[in-house]
Length: 87
Image (cartoon, rainbow, N blue to C red; front, side, top):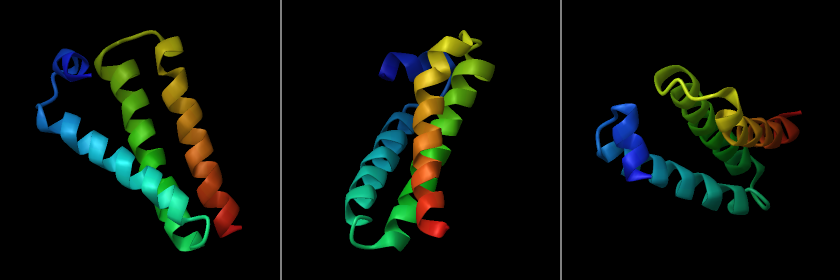
């Protein structure tokens, strides 16, 4: 992943920051089983992270759309979890 961040022209700390967001979001999803507010926040955090990843791949790296599809699917699932608990 570090090579990918270099390819995107992002500073090295983005690698650590992204990993931290993903770990916090994953832990929040587990805690969210018992605390829906945490699930909502975690879904939004992970959704935002995945949307940023898709944007980076499509716009900054000019990769084919197919390469951003996993990030977009995870974006939809994360937002879906948040919406499930909101509605």
